[in-house]
Length: 252
Image 1 (cartoon, rainbow, N blue to C red):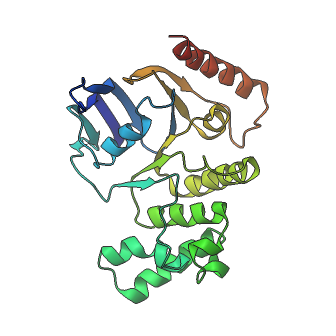
Image 2: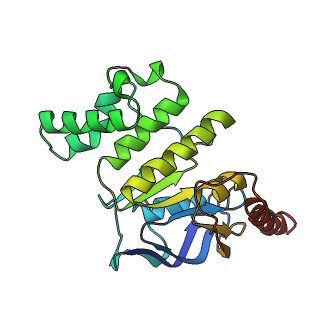
Image 3: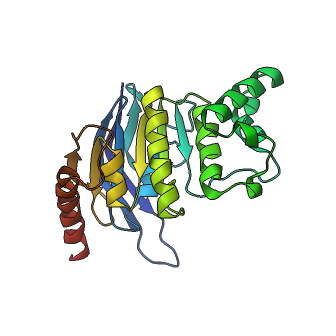
């Protein structure tokens, strides 16, 4: 199974009589099953818009998104999304937030509660099941958000800078946590980040996008085995290459 992005074109409508704003410029890529692929590019280049198109939350003006050969034309249970700002419901407990999707899908209360408790235990949050989001740290809230997405069993998980608002120590811990969860589940992950170190540490591949309108400039395969040393020569070498490509975009 692969996720195929075929010639995606997206323009934002003109405002106040101005010209349309081009966002994606025939963007094409393939993400193979079970791979963790990061998207990195200049700020405002269209990374979040691309994720929303993959998720079926927006439509491309041209091109297609294919999953298992079938077109994604709207929201699908096969695709889950984790946002940077957690998007937890403040009036629901951790348990209530994790079981939300199952509740919306019509699963019975006892079964969904049992499954949600299992996920909270696996994510190290079992003792916080009855706590509300404001009673949790940022890292714990993001773990709840990830559990809420993964419990639905999506084939593709989209992550939009999920650790961007966290301090560096918490961010590093959650990167390692994500790899642990991912290695056990085998999901396909498309991960948006502005942080080159994060992309190199996490990914099987890194796609470097151009400035808006976005297209894929280069694709880097990262073959260093896990667990990775963040400061190894291999990691530093590929980091320098990615930074060089990004620097060329700033100079345009």
